Length: 189
Image (tube, rainbow, N blue to C red; front, side, top):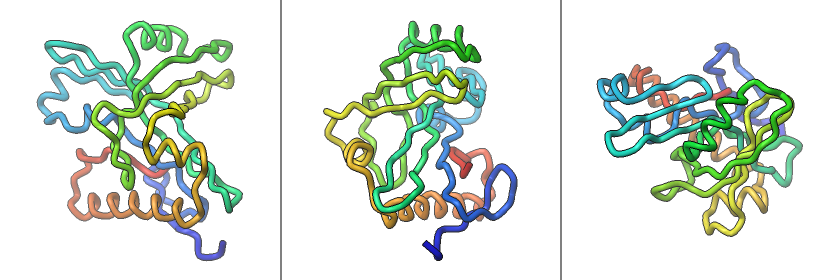
């Protein structure tokens, strides 16, 4: 494909020809908090997020979800957040960095992805740790009726992948025009 999407990487500033990973900096429920509330009840790192509401504590980890592109040699990668139970979150954090730790956890997909209307509460997933130490793999539950789930299991076309990338690029460009870096909720990786 000669006219492939080019983008400017938010990490290095260079222009790239290969598809970016579409990575979210934080889960949606953290993003929507006012800044003064985030400081009081939120805790965010590049791999973990905790939001301590008076009535509950929400715990999130960052993982990857890859959608197969049926008519191309690259796949579309997302860097997404999933919420975990307290027990699963504690197990994951206790073993974070342990390349020999293998586990799977139930989690809820916790990002609003352009071109997919994610239902309130998220999409049920299974999260698999990886022995190589990279971020866990997110697998949506096949029996959940949603377009993202169908795309994950059936794959998408190159045009659909390009459309999703363009939707994210549009959001980044609009955000950059507004010059509101505090509202950055995802980036091209």
